[in-house]
Length: 234
Image (tube, rainbow, N blue to C red; front, side, top):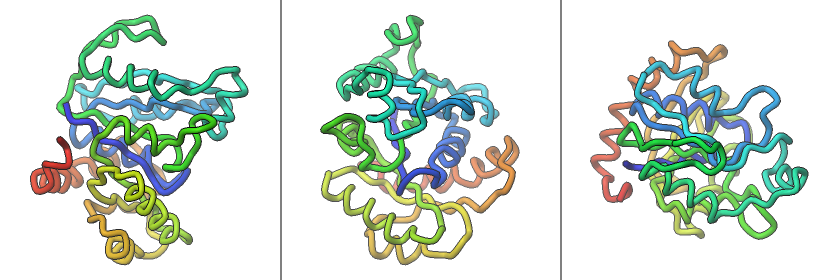
């Protein structure tokens, strides 16, 4: 199983949208280890409802926190502390299939060659008093897809994200862009040094049809990119 990490340049930049498209494209399994805020439903629930293939398996969150806030604050409100080692333990359980301690159910093994792992917010979102999302991604040590949204400010946010990736030594596969405010993509690719995988067009009303359509478009680009850069998935 090849884990693929989906992270982005911040909050509300299309991470879950891209995660859904990739999940559909590769018939991948999906896991979001930290969910902060679920009044309107979780990202896992949205993924489950929007993908159409029958192979995808959705694994439960390690931390499911009620407050829509930075995970370290949401956890503190519930009197818990997010422990990266606990998340990594669940990651290993997903890889081999075992009893999930959080749900007290048998998670089973992976059903796909790929596992889409969605991060929370951006790379420097705190998970506890000392560690950030970037620290978790370094521990998982998988290929990372960066999501950038074409909106005002995205050049700055994208290049800062790229710098953090380099500072942490993260294994970046490339960019997936979405939305249509302005076309900053070539500049971001040039200045960051990370390649573009594909662009996802703006869609006002995302539905199953859009996810399936984009999945079919994204799939060859992903597989071609992975075959050229296969060492990044080892």
